Length: 244
Image 1 (cartoon, rainbow, N blue to C red):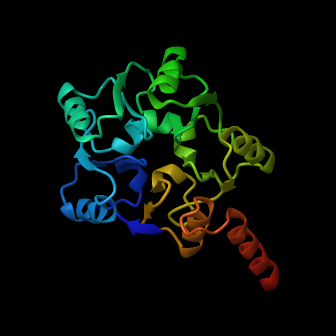
Image 2: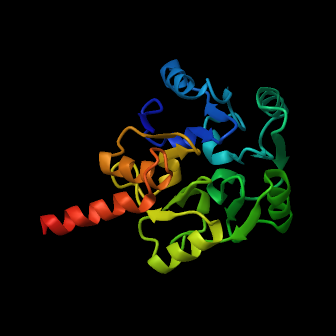
Image 3: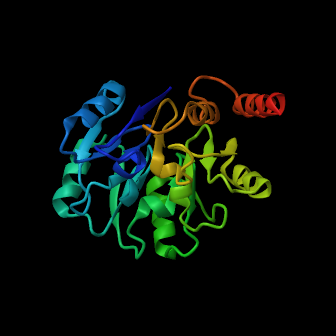
């Protein structure tokens, strides 16, 4: 089930949250209402950690992770690194990496098995991603965009990508990722799907502007209500045909 939320005045919840099947990072916020809502949704299942990375709140864009590990940029301070390490389960490997693209969340889209990465990312970084996150790594673009982490929201159940992704590209990405995939938007037509939502295998948090139709697509493709990904797409197509 998807929950609509707003981080202070922003609907880009994926900028301030990093959600996996094992933990959730929340950027430090002045108002605790957002944090309390996230904790109420998740804290019974996984640790919810309020933190900063490099002194900023944009933890979702600066980090990349899954159930196996968490990657942080070299701008992350020792104190932040230690706090995050102490707060996460022991089996989650937390590592700081030297990479010119320090916004790791924009450059890496990953689930627990496969990762798409920016085509120009360092070879050494690629090896660290494979090792720490325990995934197979593919250098890819999404609809011609190199920031795969911005334009692809990915779980073990499915993937949501940039709305202009061609059918051929969707088929190729779906084959690489081995999950169902659909092109769509969040926050009333926003193309930056991973900035507007965070999702794992059993829940999603989306920006407050996200429409009912967008939520239906998200809940369907990520199997959050047990519905098959094709159903909602067929329903939308049929309703469009009926209206025409």
